[in-house]
Length: 113
Image (cartoon, rainbow, N blue to C red; front, side, top):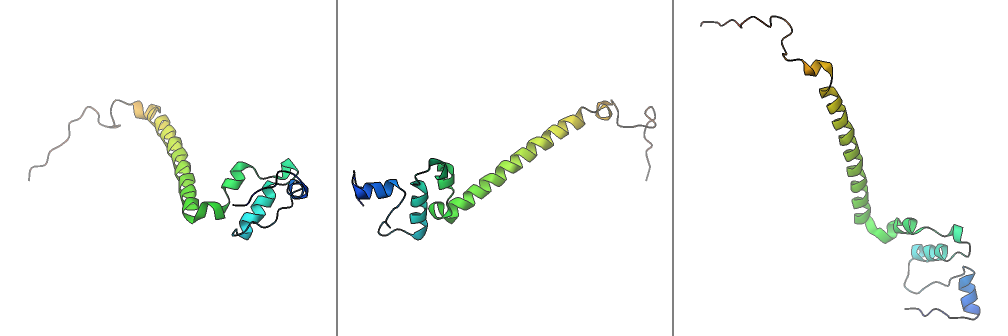
């Protein structure tokens, strides 16, 4: 753990967005920390953006996120197809009482073998 200064020159450096490298951290983490302490709030990444950093979530989490996104897309497509199916079932052609268009009154012939 690194103790953060409570005041003084080092505190002002951090406040100005200048962060010394924290021991045992990667370049990616150092760059992210520097972005997060940017003195201009609008230039800081949002929490959602931070959580999307690949080096933080790892490959498995990224794979889970991708599969979840695909699953949600498929759910939306299924809902669209169900609405389309319901419309098709309500069409006038589906409401006919018989599926035979010709020879409704005739009996079927039987073959004797």
